[in-house]
Amino acid sequence: MQWNLRMRAAERGIWKSAQMRRMLADAGLEISAGKMSGWWAGTPPTIRLDELDVLCAILECAPSDLMTPEPGKVAARRPQKAETVGGDNDVPPRVAPRFGKPRSEPPL
Image (cartoon, rainbow, N blue to C red; front, top):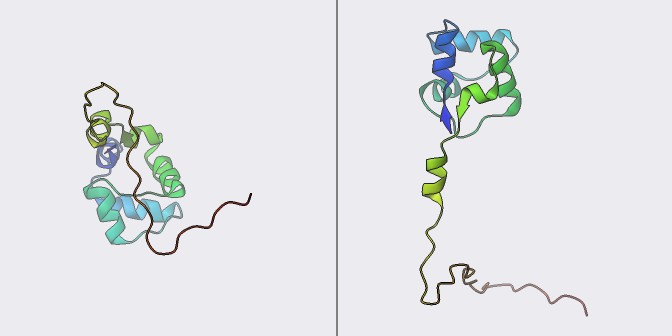
């Protein structure tokens, strides 16, 4: 996902993270300066839904305005299928045995 917080904030005339942080506090969302810096400077690794609600209310936008999908990045993360002689690419991965305490057998 591409994070568009700064662009949406600029559209509303908000140019500094401190100003955005004050507006969030006025709306009832107190966040640390470090968290605000992470949101402002780049893509946050996580964001809570209640935080997203307040951001959207402040910026008068929808969550889809703050986040843009990047399908190319998803495709790049998928493991490449190995080509086999028979052409069967749907071979499941080999499962390694568990060492240590094995699971019990199911009841008969």
